[in-house]
Structures are given as C-alpha cells and as structure tokens.
Amino acid sequence: MAQAGTTLRQEKRSHSWGSSDHITSRIAWPLYIIFGQLALLLLCFGFLASVRSRGQIPLTQDAADFFTANPQVKSYVFTLLANALALVSSYLFTQAVRHAILVSLTRPLSLSTLGHGIIISRKSLILNRHYKWVAISGAIFIVSLGQTPGWSSLLTPNPISVIVPIIGREFDFTSPALQSTVNTLLNNGTIDYYLHSTLLSFVDASGAASSTAKAGYPVFLDFGGYAHRTSTRGILPVRLQDSAMDAATRSPRIVSNTAPLQAGVARSDMSLVMSQQGLTANVSCVPMVLSDRSRPTLHRTSQALAGGFTLWNVSTDCSVGQDSSDAVTRADTADSLFMVGCQVPSQNIVAQKSFDVIVFGQGIYSNISHVCSVTPQIQNMVANYTGKDLSLVSADFAPGSIPINPGPIAFAATRAMKSGFTYAQSTLLNSIGDSLLSIFLDQQQGLSLGTLLEAYITGIVEFTGTAIKTQFLTLAGNLGPKPSQDVMRPTNGTVIVHTIGYEYDGIASVLVLMPILAFSVLSIAIAIVAQFYNRGIPLTNADFDPNDPWLLMAAASAGGMSKIFHNIEEDDVEKGLSNRIMLGEVEGRDGFLHVQQEDIRTPLLTRHF
Image (cartoon, rainbow, N blue to C red; front, side, top):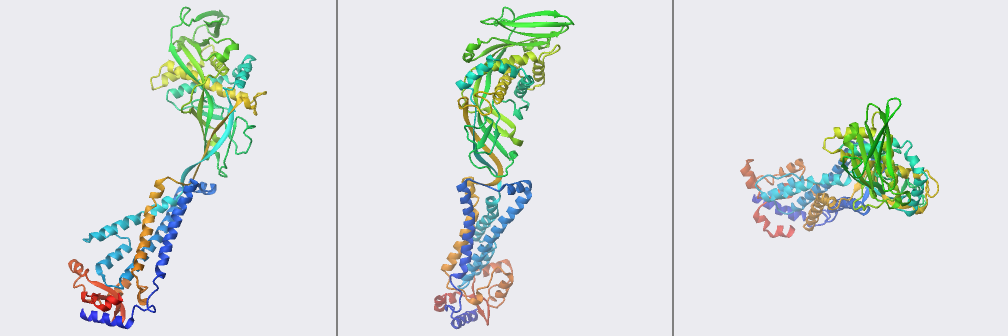
C-alpha cells in the first residue's frame, strides 16, 4: 500500500498535471450538455408557449384525416418521437454524470461514491443499505420515467374543438311589422291554405313525435330536409355558408362564419350551435265529463246518412256564436275524436294570449276527452346541428328565456291543431286518437293520457311555428328569401370544428412537463458543479467512460487496487467501499490508484488536487 502511495507521488512529480498542455479544456466538455438540454427545454416550453398564446393549434386537414383514420399509426409516430427526445435527454444526463465522475477521479474518490455514481448515471435503482443513495436513485428513476409521457403528452395531437363565431338573421315573431303581415295572411286565407295542404300529415307526426319523446322514447321528425330530435321547437333551421355575404341581405336560412374555417373540413366533422327564436306552448289538460250543462258546454248531435254512415256534429258555445266540428263514421261505430274551441274575433287576435280547447272522444277514444288550456309563447332556443350536412337538429329552451306573447301566430297554431284533428278522422278511426292510445299503452313511465295529450298539442304548436317560417321564404312583399329588415332579428352562434391538434389545458399542461424540466435542470446543474470543481482532466483519461464495463475492468486491473478487496463476499466488498481511489499511472499504464489517508494529507496532493 505504501508502495502505491510512493508511486502516486512520483507520477505526480513527473507529469505535472496542473499544466495546461496535458489537461482538457475546462469549458469545452460541458457546453454540449448544457446547450443540448437547453435546446430540449426551448423545444418543450417554446411549443407549449406557442399553444398557450394561440389557445389551439389544429393539424392540417390532411394530417388530421390521416391520424384520425389511423389512430395506431398516430400513437406509434408520436410515442417514437417522444422516446427519441427522452433518450437524447437521458444521454446528456449520463454524459454529465460521467464527466462529474471523471472530474471527481482527479481527486481521491471513495469507491462507494464511484459505484453509486455509475448506477445513477444509468438511471437505475439502488437497493442496499446506503439509504441516501437509495433516495437519490429513486428520485432520479421516477423523474426519468416521466420524460417519455411528458414528451408524448406535449407532442401527441388530441381531439379538439375549434370554435368559430357565426352570425345570421331570422324572422322575428315579436316584430310589429311581421305580426301585421301574419294577421293579413290569416285573414286572406293564405296560412290556412298552406296548413291544409300536405302539411296535415306532419301535424299528426309532430304531435306523435312529441308524445313519444315524453314517454321516454327517442324519436326524430323529418321536415324540410332536416331531422328534428323530438320536436322542431318552432325554429327555422339554418344552413352554414362560408361566405362574406352582407348580413343585411342574407337569407334567414343562411348563416356564415365571422372567422376563417379550416380548409377542407367536411360538414360531418362540424357541429353548429345557434341561438334562435322558437315557438312553443304551455299546455294544461284536465279530464272532464262534457255535456250541454258542463262548463265549457259541449253539444253533440248525430244524423243517419245513406249508405250506412252517420254524421256527427260536436260544438261548444262561445262569447260570439259557436265553434263546431263534424265527422262521418260508419253506422256501426261511433269511434271519433273532435277538437273545438273559442277564439276572439279576428280583429283582436293579437290580444289573445291563451285558448281553451275541448278534445272530445267517443267510442274507443272516450278516455281522451279533456279540456285543455293552451298558451302559445315565443321562447329563445338553443339549436344544435350535427350529422352529415348539419341536418340533425336538436333544439331546447335557452337558459333564462322569458316567454313572450306570440300574437297572431298563436291563432295560426290553434287552426293547425283543429285541422289536424279534423283531417285525422276517417269513417273507421281517428289517426291522432290511435297514436295517443298506442303511446299510452306502450309507455313504461305510467303517464296519463292527459300528460301525453299536452305533449301532443305542444308538438303541433311548435311545428306550426317552423312550418309558417318556412312558408315565409316563399312569399313576396316584406317576406321571401330576402325579407325587409323590419321583420327580422339578428342571431348568432358558433361552429365547432371537430379535429385533432394541440390545446392548452391550463396548469395540467405545465405539470406534465415537470419531469422534462427537472431532468434537464439536474443535468445542467451536475455539469456546472463538476466544472466549478474541475482543474482539467488529464488527456490520457479524458475518454475514460466508467459506464463501459471493459474500460472499468481495464482500469481496475492495472494493479493499483490489489489491496482494497480481500474477497468477493458481500461483507468484504462493503468494507472496501470506504477506500478512496483516483485515476493515474500504475507502472506505466493508466488505471485506478488506491489513495491512503496519509497520501491525502501530503502537501503534494493538496497542491495538485
């Protein structure tokens, strides 16, 4: 052992390791570690800052379509990229620890520190009695595990929704000019003629759809090229047109975006959310036995007709005259369903807010007899458009919407209701009555016929609003496809483009990158601290890599460590770990030198190390 110390002192005198001609530059080797990790941090947090500043960065449509159609390829590509970046960072960390070990080996270094440092440079766990090293290795191991997930979470594009504002305009049922026009159309029979046309089948379908939905079943009502979920809610469905058309001349059915849409996006990859004015009704129905003496009154007469038929007439007394309804059935059946109700004179229809209607059934429909109070009202709706060509419509009441008296349009709704009940009657049955009974018998929620009738009437009123707005587009005057401003109101909404890309998710977007930051900062810190203590590494030792098992065995086999370990038993190895070594020359070759305590205290070592 003493001989080794003597050899060490002799070698130091001959080589003069403090000379700049024989040592590496003090600044060159850590630069690529520091700049490499800084480049990774710049890529990581620069990309995050870009996403945060823009909020969202969607992929190009071609890339989005490709990765959406090939999700496994997407996972493979971006996981591979994340792994590559994590491996670069790990390599730089390993090099930082390697150089720190080389710097430390220019001074006496304990075998324990050397061995544990080598394990840590590999980011492996240390499991022994040296708890400080166990804790350090555990922390580095955990941080290193978070690098690949961190890069993957940053770089992998995920489903995002890009929101683009849209604007448009629509018919305004609260407009005095439009109410005056509707009043005129009611009085000259234009609206009645329209409602009594092929729309009669939709009147029954709209009521049945509303009642079916009330019973808990999914249902769509097809009308005008759109599929309405449950009910039309009285809105006029819109079409999205990517156009700079002036809002003042835009058709009520056309809405357009106020910011560019992503090029090439299919309508099926979009959804549209619009704030629109709708028409609905507050309906309350109660069962009642009706007769000449009930309130309201109900008069029923019958008359035999030739051919084995019977003419039925049902009427009720109004403040002015009566309202009546007729039906013809076969003589052997009385199965029929009627609707009658009183309305104010036509010159005052704007003032009428609610209507009392009688639904009277006989035969198999007798249980449907109810007196209903119907209050049509304008409500703001939120309409969602999805599916191919944005033709699936789901509308519901906007939060905080306040009901408004619709004026004469309510009058049109009651006419549609009565027409629907009248034309649903045949000589054998009534299709509305059959629909109500079928829904009542099939439903599982225990709803009464009155509740289903309320939903039925509501559906008819809501459909009437949509149908009449659709008719407005075909008329002249202040209506038509380009109506005057005084019958319109502005509306707005958003287009939601469903694609994949990058989106800032608040603090979570930063937290998942902490392992990347911690690992890079640790690598830089190790390089800087090692450089602070570095007086230069002998050129003959500059390429020594303690992670290389062959180089490690070559250095150990030089002979300078022959007296450190007495055996390979665990206890013998543990005792030897407290010994200190350094890199030097042993009998003319480079290798590990055993440095004893008296060698560390010598002025020579103090001066050189």
